[in-house]
Length: 163
Image 1 (cartoon, rainbow, N blue to C red):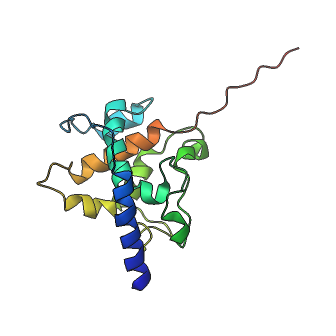
Image 2 (image 1 turned 180 degrees about the vertical axis):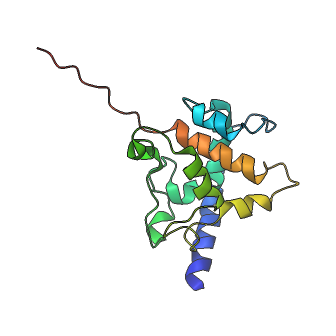
């Protein structure tokens, strides 16, 4: 219990550091695309990614870091190091696993770390912000996912073989 409270306190306090001078988000009235449209997409929606950046820095950067590499100020105190979010596409044969990332953020899917005190089920937390100027849970999850997608490491260009 003490460890859980310590992690929550660290996330809350470090969130204030990352909330300073956040980027300006575009209006939050963009419609949610159909799942089939996301699978056909060739890249992230940059408007959604810009809005997701603000949410990411507020809720995720304390653990995953400003660089998305799992090096946030809270990371050393966690049982399991947060993953490097910039290599998700590389680890998935060059395709960004949009649905899986969204599911991990909102809590529909779990791993050894998710569901433990180390990673909150953000879908439940975002649902508590309804009625405020914050986006609803599905929009927040979608925007964070587009932000993470927008910062994936680029695959190295194929080298040409000279004969």
